[in-house]
Amino acid sequence: MAGHSQFKNIMHRKGRQDAARSKIFSKLAREITVAAKAGLPDPAANPRLRLAIQNAKAQSMPKENIERAIKKASGNDGENYDEIRYEGYGPGGVAIIVEALTDNRNRTASNVRAAFTKAGGSLGETGSVSFMFDRVGEIVYPASVGDADKVMEAAIEAGADDVTSDENGHVITCAFENLGEVVASLEKALGEPESTKTVWRPQNVTPVDEERARSVLKLIATLEDDDDVQNVYANFEVDEETMAKLSS
Image: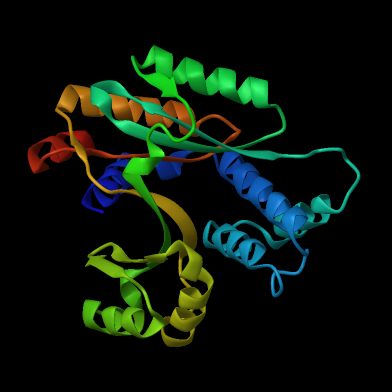
């Protein structure tokens, strides 16, 4: 999990939160609409919708935007989104997974392929790199919720698999299929989390130097800037000295 956490830290330190709020809200709304359309429009009876709404609130998405996205699922606007996963290799042989929600498969595939090609990478078939990752649930709490011991105790009681705590907060991971139950238990002990989602966690990491790390980060930024792309995961790792340079 070190590679995934390290990658996230670099991205946060590089100010990815500065991305246009409207773009963030658009992606959150799309996930809410897809979740509502896939099940019932009631978050109490639709775990995926509940998580989508929770994450939208964590990003301070206005209540009216959330309600509009839910209503859109039952509307007749003709918008239908396909969930697609792209897999490939970036600079330095770094494995990358891209999750997208799109209403135009050809457009999204073309954009993703172009991003990989421009970065000197290559897009592969579905399954070409995902076998190197584990699909897990990730629950994030702020540091203010309590110390590491308190969170670890709550996580063990909830049936989670792992906890990583530092000055930025607590990241709890669990089996993908147990995410709903674990979150419900944690909420009773710690309150509502900052975010709850499923992620692709690398089983092993690929060490890269500063030059390749910058190339990979640029590729990830390009992919994340695409309106159809929801999430990007990579399995690269850099040493502390390189991380300091990338974070500056």
